[in-house]
Image 1 (cartoon, rainbow, N blue to C red):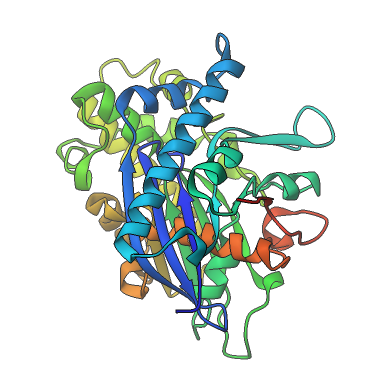
Image 2: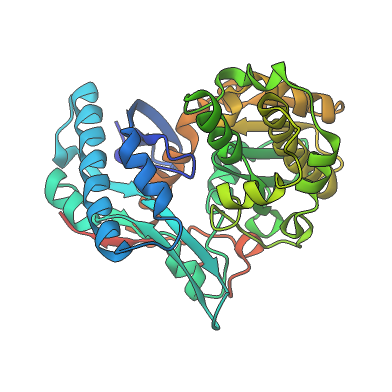
Amino acid sequence: MGKLYAGLMSGTSLDGVDGVLVDFDANGSPTVLHHAYLAFEPAFAAELLALNSPGHNEIHRGALAANRLAEAYAAVMESLQAAAAVKADDIVAIGAHGQTVRHRPQEFDAHGYTVQLNNPALLAELTRIDVVADFRARDVAAGGQGAPLVPAFHLDVFGRRAERTCVLNIGGISNLTVLPATRKGMATGQDILGFDCGPGNALMDFWCKRHTGSVFDRDGAWSETGTVSQPLLERLLAEPYLRKAAPKSTGRDLFNPDWLDTQLQTMAATSAADIQASLCEFTARVCTDDVTRHAPDAALLIVCGGGALNGALMRRMQNLLPSVRVQTSAQHGFPPLQVEATAFAWLARKAVKRETGSLTSVTGARGARVLGAIYPR
């Protein structure tokens, strides 16, 4: 084995924690040794969702939620270590992203802010492993969006292709990385474009939970029982964020249940299934419109995140991009639910080595920065 790192990711889908144990070879190429998943209990997921909006006693509640999240992270680490039969001393560091509850870069004052609930000190105490956390704040301090942070990783693992390639991560929010063709040599960081497209699974999951009790629409099956409402789709697509120029980032601060309910105010006659079909179409359009706008010559779209497992969504994106091969990341060496967690193991390694992990062409920061704060075990 080379150097072992772990990556822990709990994203905007609010479903649970994905963890990976990653072996990096001498050239820094990652191989995932094991993957573990721990679902959030419904009440905890509901609390995390509630903390995305102002509420009573939220500092106290947020601190307790951070403690509970650290305990969940530690449980995932225990599973990974047991599966790989490795001790804490065998792992250089854990990259622990935390749970984003606010993301407002460049707003309110000259800086804005980003907040990920986390207790990396507690995680280091529980695991006896160095923890790297708070990845986004340094980029925001440098005038950047602090998101998305995965394009540099996408370049490293998906970027060696002789055709224009896009990588689309569909979690609660969707983000796109545009990688150039490399016929004339390797791409550099300045050739890369990346930004948050808009909603991914967040609105579909919310609507599904409200009307069926299920936390997500498995394979998009429910959405396929409905018919897209064109008036609703046009209203959703009128959201100003979608026309904003990159660099840009978003989250549940914007695309949340209140936003959706506002769009539905004149849609009382539309059935729940038709609304779900419209939300699936909305996500497909948001993502594919950005591919068409920013990479009209793209030949390949690699999709990762939970949205890659939604067959209805994948088929719709393929129909909207007939000249592009729409494939999941599993066809390129990384199962969809392992990509983001592996990216934060990769970023943790960058931080430990004091190497920059951001791309200024993506976030708009004044320069590339070493991302993450290190909490020694």
